[in-house]
Image 1 (cartoon, rainbow, N blue to C red):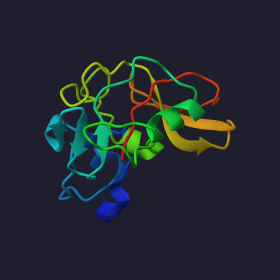
Image 2 (image 1 turned 180 degrees about the vertical axis):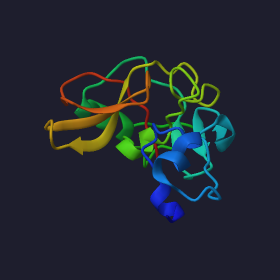
Image 3 (image 1 turned 90 degrees about the vertical axis):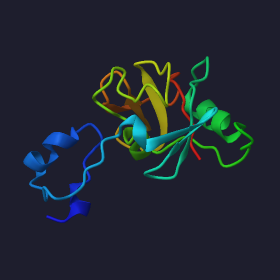
Length: 153
């Protein structure tokens, strides 16, 4: 099996991936760990994807449309354009099951074990995908529900 076929959902623990998917054990699996991230004040650069993440979590929660608007108007660390809600896959890429909540605490301090909006539409619920940093799972949610936000660019 090629290494590209070994890209699981983020909730699968990297140490068991070869056993579950029969992947090439020589493939270098990169855990999400904190060493992958570079803290740049109010932002965090992901060295694996080159995405820049909002480091903190806003003090309030938003419905989906207002979460999108919040990100679009965000200005952090001199970066005032290009902010958006992350895709479901982007948020799942931050999940690290070694921690509770399930995200590296140094680059992303004070992250609640709670739901976070993604930009990804969930057609089966007529809503949008959310990722739960309490256990790393994802689910569809009604867009009128208030959830946490972490923007990316």
